[in-house]
Length: 350
Image 1 (tube, one colour):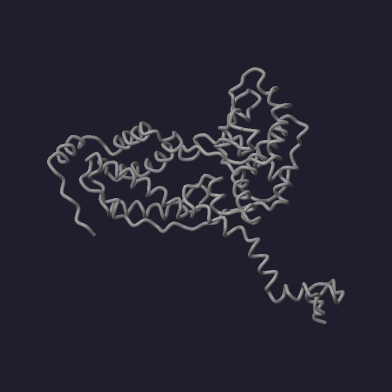
Image 2 (cartoon, rainbow, N blue to C red):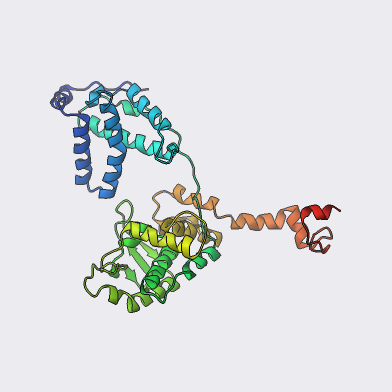
């Protein structure tokens, strides 16, 4: 481990000027700095929710000032997170622990840069190894169509919701990105959707299929004018009051379509259409880098997770090469169908 460079006179002076400010006050200043740097309100709120419990935990132990926090203190916080129980009685997942610890580390890097602390003990904290998790649930093509077909498109909101879910499945855009779509963001001539300021405040252009566009056109013709009679926010998908749909509303309508209308017992809502689109396209031979561009992933490794869920190529290899499957294709004599057996496995023993 490299020896830290001792602070110069200017750093010592700035450190002394901040001695009277508490860690909580520094946290507020850090969040204001993030806002000035152009971070989204959602990101800033996420940092606040992750760092504030740490600051409160320190205060309960008499550690009001940043220089009082040492590596053993941070390790104590890490042990606390490992044993913490949520409202449902379950412990925090490794990813949840990692998010909280990483947020504290980012906060402490800012403290060091501002010379509020003279060294950063958070850099020596050993973070838990990140879990490599697969998407929790995906739909088959049949299940996806079952969900879409369960909506009553004779009703205005049913038609609107069908158009929303068709867009989610066709483009794979996120819930937030769908809610932020404006009327001008759908290009029917080119067959694309312009995602503006998506995750990470990045724009991208996403292809959208003819079927989804047809449902959107029907919604724009038959439903949206009625919803926008009194007020029109300019969003593509709007409420009865003409305003854009909130994330919670999108989650609710997607969840109801999946579990109440289609009666598919799978968790998830809007994001499951994103997972399903990527998996189904990979099953049909799409290139991983093309899926990466559509989903807006910064790293290819993020997209490659879907290759572990898209197992259609493996299923085809299994069917062609597994001895039992080869026998089945050749209609072997010991096949239950060939022997006319229709009973249980135990009945075949006699």
